Length: 273
Ligand SMILES: [Zn+2]
Image (cartoon, rainbow, N blue to C red; front, side, top):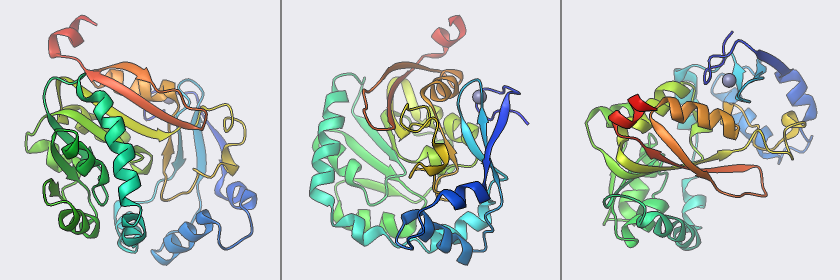
């Protein structure tokens, strides 16, 4: 068994699904229990181990649910309307974040990968970008189109969309990578979408954070099968450097979350590195 990120053989089990269930609060209002109930209705039996790579800190569940199961699971996901109610605040926040990156990118094309109902896409449009969002959830994309007609939205998955050949100056991917089963293919597609010298802004929970490192199973970001893998900063560095990025910085965060800013190197620079 090798690490899906760094290929190390030092992958160790750190707990089973039974350990995780035993550590959950008993309250049925706990988000993780709700997710589990929904996954059960989609036919998922929670029987897995958590594997952590001793070298890069990447954690995943094994075995992972298959694509058909995840399709059924997300088909029952109707959080869109509740989420849409938070619009103005979320757009303001995303706009501040995106505006700070505006002068550091070579052009003005923007894509949000996993855009949900499109807040960050609208924020990028306000910040002066030509803004696109993609999401695999057709309900979310329909809501996004209705709310933000000045932006472009597409229901493609990332690999299909990247294969169409579009390249972007700023690629934004917030709280998505932890939902992905094939992490390598996802990272490769993010790389394909990013223009040379363009920037990638990515956020995900931080499994290497001091607050959660030693109490992983009770961490509230551990909510399979919604979250299937958890990165540390070194795991992200490893995954994205291998895909042709240079990590510019990790944002400071007191909470266990990672904000990574990475620049896509032109081919020549990659060969020299
Ligand atoms: Zn690893």
